[in-house]
Image (cartoon, rainbow, N blue to C red; front, side, top):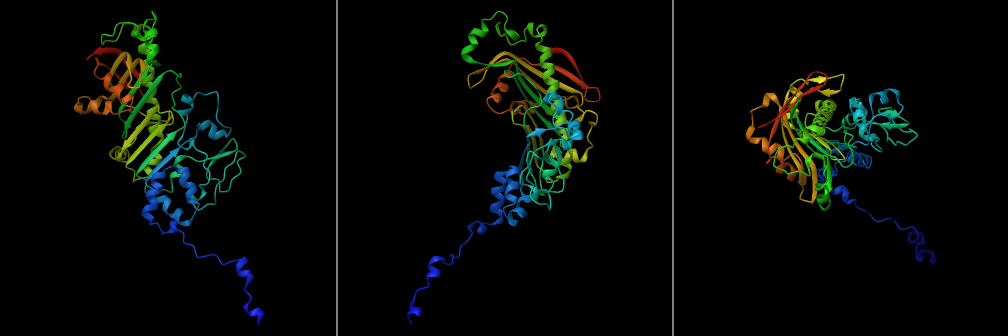
Length: 391
């Protein structure tokens, strides 16, 4: 009798767990997709993909994707699997790339790359999977093309390189933006020999040997010293380098553009903010319809004959107080577009860069304009008419 009324101590020690509800499971798929689209980053999405089968099903439907590339490997390195050749500059190495050479060590996205187990990549190269990526220096890599292949509905794609291709000194400013369809639509380049603080401006202006004529009177024209002290030659190098970098990036995007028909916008930029290649929906469709004019030897899209407009200021003060020394703006369009859409020229030039450089551009276009032209002589080789004529 006593035993029948004795409390069951086991239920106190090991109580039955209450019924719990996973509130995350109650969220509709549309809301989860909105969250994933805000996340965007392909590595983070890859990690989310292994959380549950539901996530694994939803993530390939994400429309807004960002791929951040951590290393760039040349085709020589990919062939020899011996790692990056440190003797090359970033600029020269970039132009030796093939599509599979832009690589990123991806962790925890095995489910993303197909019906595979989780890839866990270490410095010793140990991983689970079936060899979908290259192994270089003991580390497994995947190209953006491989990483993106299981996304079915990408509309907005951004690929970010680790740094700009153009090896320039720390105090030099060089920024460019290029818009492409099947070939170059337009390109804007903003450069300066140095960026200095306003408080140092007075000392620099009083220097007798100041570069680019900053110590002389600014009458709105390019000073004679610009032609004799290497200023013009330097601007030509900046312009050619920006065009080559842009055409090389465009060439590398072909597989991604052809495989993802849903794309409305594609941006290929770099972490330094040096250069940006942009393509809108119409330009993407143009590339799919019209054959690409490319140089397979140089791994670049061939650029047509070009018309250019140049603006120059010995010094230009930015809204944040910094001063651009030898500020130069170059606006580039194919010669066949000469005279077309002239009314919109100011818009595509002035909107090329974010602040404070947008203000710098708008200040420069108010100054005297100079013009020149360029031709591409096969294999991506450019020739310039270096005589600037006042417009």
